[in-house]
Length: 166
Image (cartoon, rainbow, N blue to C red; front, side, top):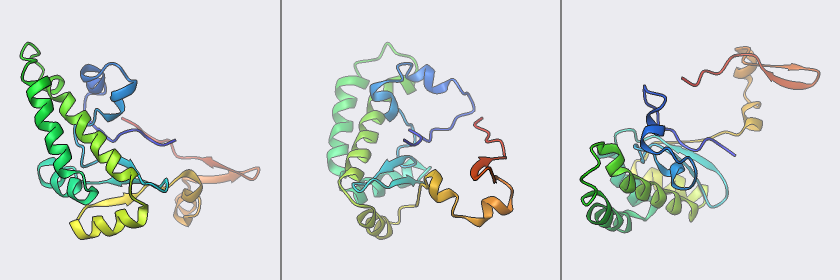
């Protein structure tokens, strides 16, 4: 459907170290929650671009209308899951329940709003974002052909430029 997260780290195995179970909550194991892919009520995927969590998280939660609910969940997770887990030496693993809850709140908030509503709220709150294009809309841009990223062979689009994921 689309990429599940935008977490980037120098170590390719970092997410596996933190959350080896790739099912269920693993899709929410993003340590930069204000910089993730979200889906609107009308099915439009949006990439929010707040890499600096300290600066961008509160406005993002506010724009989505989930700020106080999320803060309550964070406090609950700290009390019930993070602090009692003192035997875990890896701080990222200890904090994972907090980030999973934050990401779930962001996803839930965005799924209740249309793309137009999100645009308006993001503009009001100063949220950086971009619409994620699907492959069909990608072919509407002449630049991909001018730069020879895509060409047509036998009436079918072919990607000619390797895409690096490292």
